[in-house]
Length: 126
Picture 1 (cartoon, rainbow, N blue to C red):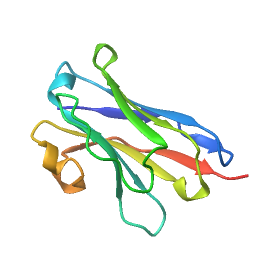
Picture 2: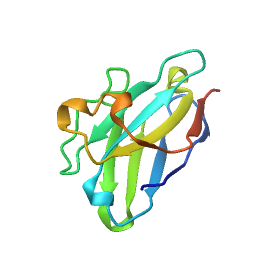
Picture 3: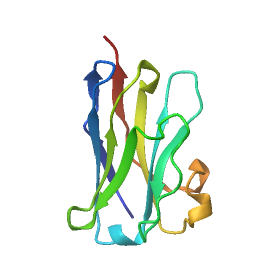
């Protein structure tokens, strides 16, 4: 069992930056593939970034390429999402997800993840 708690969301102006954190419980953090997804009102959940247990990072979602960076700190059991050059269309609830059975080719599939955080709201507005 893994519990995920996101933090770091908030209100930011266009062009600004935020860093989201996802703290994972349990000593098996290093055994899990992890990812970030987001969901805006009225839209489907969208893949942002993901990494396998061996730190192989999947291609970023097209809408965030070159602006967002995923990373994980095994010592702190924490997954991060650094978001730069934020745009109003980045406004959404951002979710952290984890699963021990995901291979590289499945990182972008939201249905493959068993564990989800509660989400953190990111609002980009002037």
